[in-house]
Image 1 (cartoon, rainbow, N blue to C red):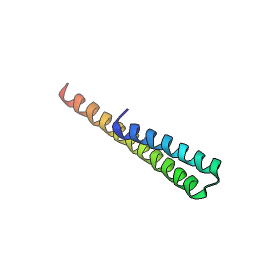
Image 2: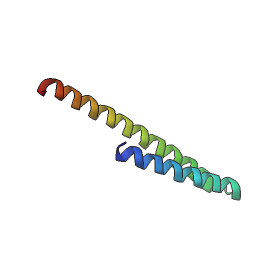
Image 3: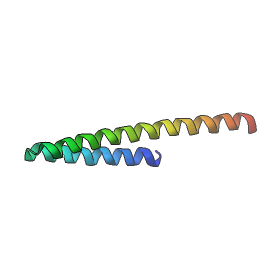
Image 4: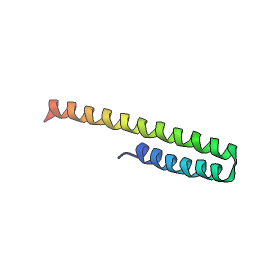
Length: 67
């Protein structure tokens, strides 16, 4: 797990907590902010997945040439 994946997961968790708090208190703004933060975290996590895949492919292709 790379740092983008970790940060994305934490952001999703924070967003979910904020979203739930907004639902419980009836605060639509807080709920919407939480939803947005959760989506942002998911995007960051996926970006980390892509980076990880690219890094792995590059390492594998370099090893094919140099190993």
